[in-house]
Amino acid sequence: MTQILDPASEMEAEMAGAATACLVAALDHSKAKVVKVTIEVDGDGKGEAPVLLLPPRALRFFADVLRQMAKREPMMLVPQKLELTTQQAAALLNVSRPFVIKEIEAGRLKCRLINRHRRIEFEELMRYKDAQKQRSAGALKRLNDLSQEMGEEL
Image (tube, rainbow, N blue to C red; front, top):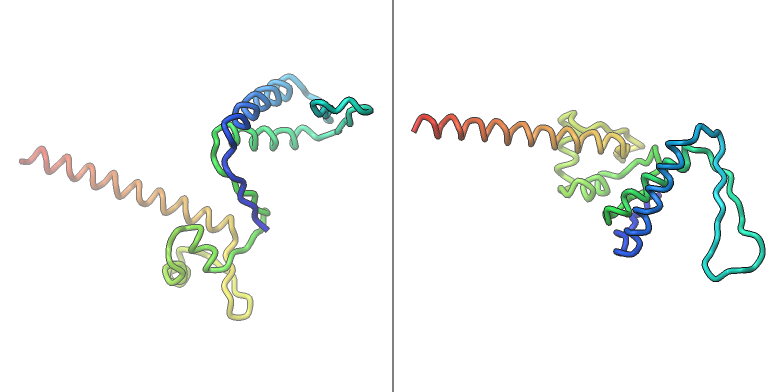
């Protein structure tokens, strides 16, 4: 299902930053359809190092993951069509389950029913979260504008 990856240590973040730079440079200068990656392990002098053949898209994905590691931010890997229960959605949004149900009933958050159980697609939940963030930013801007207007009147 989902897996939350803890933030990288300082040493891991430095290694991830250097690896990101190498991957991006290699991808920027390559029009190859396949990229060969040789894996060497320090202190392991046994045999030949294995070679991986990877599509460039996979390396772009690895570069994105490494970029996040370099920032020392936690990451969550989520299957593309993951569906969450209302309780899981509430936990992710940091709100109560009844609030999530009210948002569904008001038509602001889409879900599908499986028997009597609601399921919310992760992608829909992220759309809702972004829309809420934009609404909050708009309300804050209007409040700030109103405050400035009132300050000029006084």
